[in-house]
Length: 390
Ligand code: FES
Ligand SMILES: [Fe+2]
Image 1 (cartoon, rainbow, N blue to C red):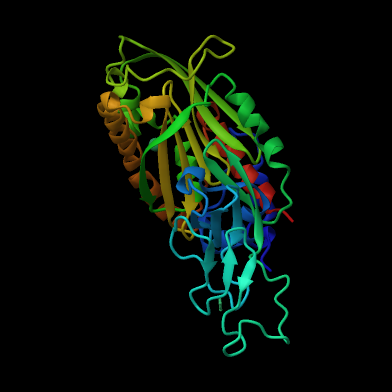
Image 2 (image 1 turned 90 degrees about the vertical axis):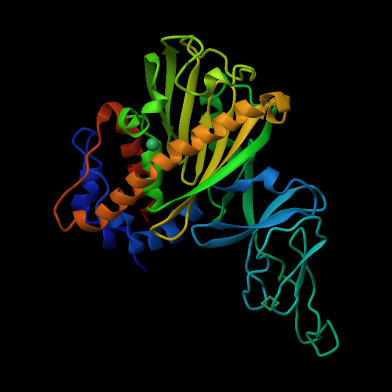
């Protein structure tokens, strides 16, 4: 089996682990197909990975297929109301049991030979396994339930741990809860959603989303009217990489963003320990994304779709009635448009950086990280290497 040291030699790894200002980024081949195959086996199964939203399957009997870097999954809210995850692999001859989202089901019927499982994964029947009979005395069906996968929920986001050996989910998420303790998420309700496909490796996509260095050139509208900004970097290995900002605007209301139009939305943030209203954008390592604003949040997924493409999906949440109040529909529409624009603006960065990763090793060019802004990118890349070690 391919190991990390088959793809990166000791000097490559050593260069990544220098202090941020002197470090080299991951080599270009870390963004290619062979490295992705190693990540599929050794990275994604080893830690908690966001794969969906509880509100995607709101009622008992609702279920949907999900994908974690090529691992096919079923997310099912059982008739008992509990959400479970299973490998979406039939115990007969490995057909995908669930190919489309479904609602109000009592069972899942595999499309190929109709083996039938209940919403808690138990194998219920094997129709016609012995001609007209559903039972065969020579065929033992015990132990052939859908194979379960460990699942955890944080706010609306569903996480799985495929190998089952990651730390307890609540302990895993504790640093993030501590970071965000000045927020009130108790009454968030789901509103709009949108998606975009990034034409690049999942790590290019995540790295582009966790630094504010590029805002003046990539998203100038996001800093328009900002008189003073107090940036921050926050991280916890295997859990999150966040950048934050506490901003004061030159005029009130903020003229440069939709804030002027969404003044009717309830504030969900309290001042942090420095007395600042701090907002965050983060990768919830490796496949989750989370963004807070003073009056709404975005919960998202950065789902690898092969080594060269990343599906990005975000859902907006507002406190209480603000998620559906008709009087605030314009404010919500403005925010939807504003956030979609930000992520569309990043598409060419992802595309061309990814393309250049294919050539830059041959050209002898290593990437660098600016310590003031990009310490989290450096830490994220070290986290990737550490998870891939034997
Ligand atoms: S593969 Fe599912 S019933 Fe045959
Ligand atoms: Fe960006």
